[in-house]
Picture 1 (cartoon, helix red, strand yellow):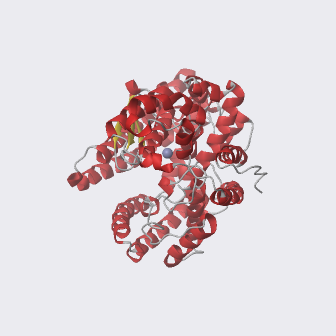
Picture 2 (cartoon, protein in one colour; picture 1 turned 90 degrees about the horizontal axis):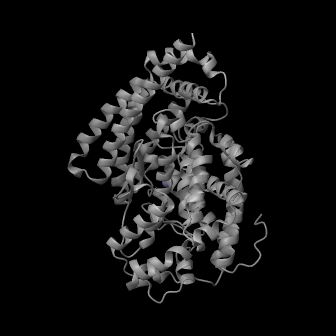
Picture 3 (tube, rainbow, N blue to C red; picture 1 turned 90 degrees about the vertical axis):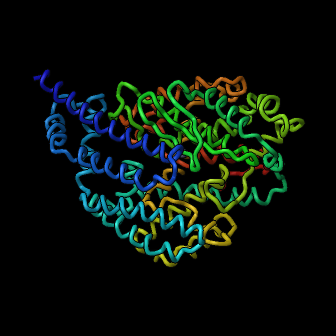
Length: 513
Ligand code: ZN
């Protein structure tokens, strides 16, 4: 009996691993498309990827898989939901139910609309022509409402869509913590804008040779723990990280010789994603225990290394002498560490999300989250979206886009049907601050370690507590398990108030309430 169960369990795992291999092939094709492929072959690549995604959907809805799960979920192997076998069976059931609820016709229509939508958006952004994009967005929203109905939800349709990116998260809870964050961020942003302290940002518009940026980026990524024996760093237009195999993680960046922060902090960000991928259990590759929890948890790893570590003064105490003396003497000779540190931490309202600083970034996300919720629930007609967008930028950030290209048309997400994705960026920032506090409690003075160039204790703590857990817990359970806390804006706000209060000499910021 036990032998037979073990055999069934092994068959279930092999089924999942094979599906993951097909997924890995798709990821490799996507990586190639975005780094190496001649753009003339785009249509053919889209055909190849559609073929693979149809095959993967067929595997996820394979009746044989359903049978295996059914026979195992009432067995002793599933009795303890937190045991390795229990987690594997439970998560496979969850993924299977989700895949089964989506009619193949809807999946196909969503995928076609997403490809066309992104093409249409690209042109509309180029022409600054929202009206050209409006019908596609209306159709996308119609399909996403259908998708939400097909998937089902307890409270509101947005729950079903959010669940794709942040499993088990509830809209009301996410909205609650983001509202709290907004209430505290807006006065902080105004206080920063009113300060007469200004960073010497001119330092960062000097010339930083591309080859030196790449060499420095590799040095830093390796120092924080990205393993180049099991990964690569390449160039792309829109940076991303892709876990292609158990020992193959691809990160990407882009270089601008007059704006070194883009590649430097971008590389740290993607290396943070990569360190998570590389920290997953290789023996569980393709199985829930070897997979990431959610986009929010993934983003917490990238943001932790990019912001909590990479934008700290201690980090630069260690790396600045190398940057100044070895990599960028032409631009940094004679520039004091404190000037450089202030320059890479400039906080001010800007129009473009991907260029936003650590303080204002979450307000960009809030605006998108609030608007997509209203759009999905039909409380905001698509035709009125640009005006609503501009009004929120005025209210939250005190600035207004001069056109839609730099406003509502700047992000690709909605055109590709990724509704429910944006909040995961802010969840990542919130989780990162929780992890950082807990790591500091466990490891002692992290600043002292960073200043000595020691990043391994932090990486190992993250690996042990987060990476090695795979999907044993949901995001909120993992936070509870590791820190004993519930998600809150407080750790992030405490970090921002103390760091920026000092930089901008704001004095006592109180609670910001
Ligand atoms: Zn990221």
